[in-house]
Length: 461
Image (cartoon, rainbow, N blue to C red; front, side, top):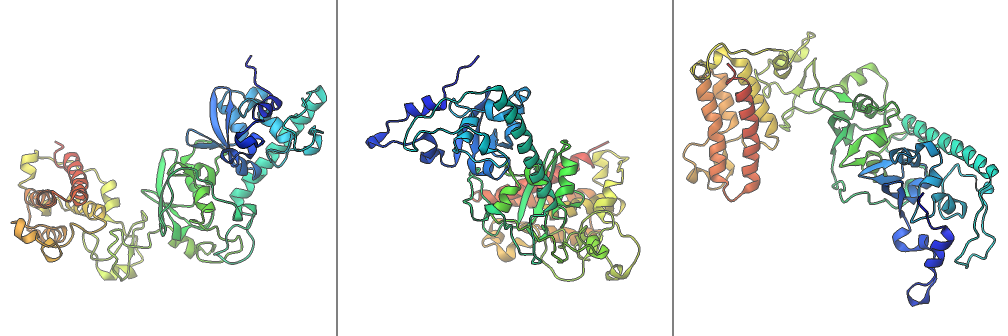
């Protein structure tokens, strides 16, 4: 059995410090907020402030755990006493809790045996563990677990917020605390979108749509908008998953963005459109607020009735009649039609290249829509000779997506001519941007989307 030094021995060994100063190890700067801890063969870092707030406080392998979860991770759940099984440089956390060096709500300090020695002493009396004390610890463990469960429920229900101002931030005790540096990744100032994951599910969290766990469909997946609670329910396999803890951004729990004030929780009494229960307001949250191509244009958007995508009339392919806005019938975008359509070419690839685009408009529309969507900055959409200095002198045959779209709508192409013009965009980009790797990489990314589509659709026999 592993023999750990007692807290007394640990303190005695640290009695002499540089310059003749005496200090206890938990008062050293490097241990003021974080303590290296072990449980069995598992190692982690204990965040003292998080422990005091009854939050997941032990970080191991870029994941956050409660003490009970960390004990289970280390295979020590049979002990059912994390204070005894988790150690800090030898002594168990139990001794630090008993002597007030760690704070944990639910730990009944009146039951703990404290040293009667003066505070200036660097030694503590040994603590005898009787059967009665062990029974008390079991009761404390149940009390602490109840506190943890209660905290998790309150986190889900957002009951800690009061007032009616949707800009109200959390008013609990962590509002003025220093923000812990979990990783080197920090959100950019003004960042409005955050790539988040939960299990195998990924999506983009939009700050402007976030209200709370249940209010505001703020996470955009490939095929729908979700609230954080819905996202974690679909993405996590754990029955007790929590959206603040189990939705991750850059390896950190979503709660880190709330603590850094990058996301603001709305009051439970907030009556803004995101928190409103009006059926029409809830229906509108299911669709994108902006054109799918980030064109920045004004005008009415047509919302697909089968997915979250929205389009301006001229941004969609085929282009839409403005009167469709007044039409009460369901409208389905080209992406949804393509995803429900099985395209089986009945010719060889060489024969397909000779066919007029009018015979294969659906895959051609889908291909150009996909390329325009990937080109979010519209680098390849407009005539480069207008805005790019020196382009016309170096490139003999300029080509851009808007020009290809016009010729496709006029049905001037065969499949082969369409693909040739698209490939011309990539070759021109590679030639002109030999010394500009950032733009060259954009062209490579767009080319990958193109090649995957052609291989999947037109080259398939």
